[in-house]
Length: 275
Image (cartoon, rainbow, N blue to C red):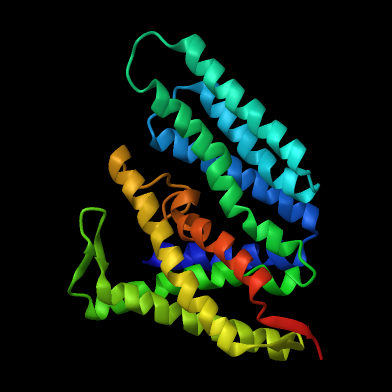
């Protein structure tokens, strides 16, 4: 617990500085590094630590996703990038195939870690690039991490009924409810900060709706990556962050919460113009 608190005390200010205070290009560069690290962790966890070519393809294309978003690559450029990624990955698989099982799994691992995860996670950059992006960019993190915190403490205090024991034996139904309450509380606190510190108009009913919807998505993200860890037979994706595991262990809930939050911000705005 001490290690978890220490890491959080260091990482949260760094995250805030990068997401809110740093120039967008620097935030983008940091996301590229994070994406490459997550691709590395996923490939290693999936059992392809020695597949240097697959690892390199996954890391390079994962790092490129935020750059595409930042520079506003149009649909044709993005489609071309996906084509090159798919072509290289299958070409590697075809040329290296010698009759062994698992070749298709290796291809899917590269595609999943280099495109699917980064595309979802980097919705936080899409939020940052919006007109009020500096006020909105922390919403996915607040929703996901307040959900995680609420689930942890409520589950620890009141948890009895197991949620999905074969995937995550410590998670409970009571904890899942606590996660939703924690996310709602986080959205309310976020709204108060935006309202009084930034002078923005805020719709608290919509923020509460954000919390109610985003928490189940964040919890599903946590469970999805836990399921993959069970399949990979690993405890954590890495040990970069003491008490938290790897980078992918720390942002798994954000991977699912960020694209949903981006859609909610676009379709049901909660934060309006300054007053």
